[in-house]
Image (cartoon, rainbow, N blue to C red; front, side, top):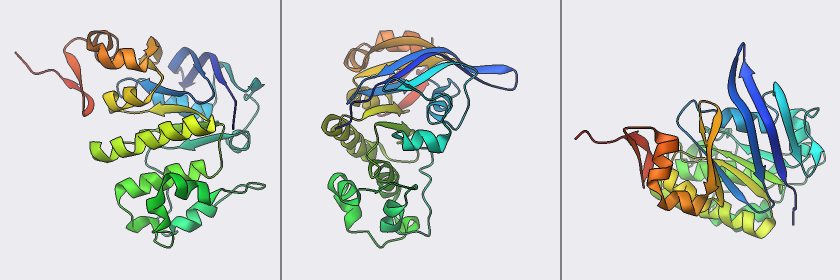
Length: 250
């Protein structure tokens, strides 16, 4: 079982002369699922890409199990135990399910059986090209590729993109189960707010690159006024089955 802790302190990331995220302080304990919420452009994906090493921080620190990640490349961070499931899944449509799960970096030994344990449907499609899978099955494969590496920290960006809420409601409990059973920490960026909060232990709400609210997922799930005031802004509300949308005019 993994026991690594992610700690982010005073993280600032920017493009050109502007800062996309500013002064972020985030922690993720072993086995904990933490949701990053916020409107489009709030800095959620930028935060994940910086943790995994795809972007460089301007200032601040990111440590995993006490180890400073600043000098590690994206591949180095992957070897350190960070697995990133990107928005859009990143599958290769011509490769089969089994070929995807056997992809590995030098020195890695993917645990394919573990993937089939959490996603038994994929076992029946082992020889099927990814391009012939449904959207939900493609997302299972993307998550499965990450789990095959037995990560210490799992980053999941917009799991629900292009998927029906019922499919999302099937996938999120698997991530919750994996975190509970493996001790892997999870950072989840998700537009389906209520589903994310039902899965997460804690949540951070970002607005314009800054954390404006941090609380337990269960509390935010049941306190819409608190969530609305920090995340959606005036004239917006959360829905149980989708992302933020303008409130009905009255």
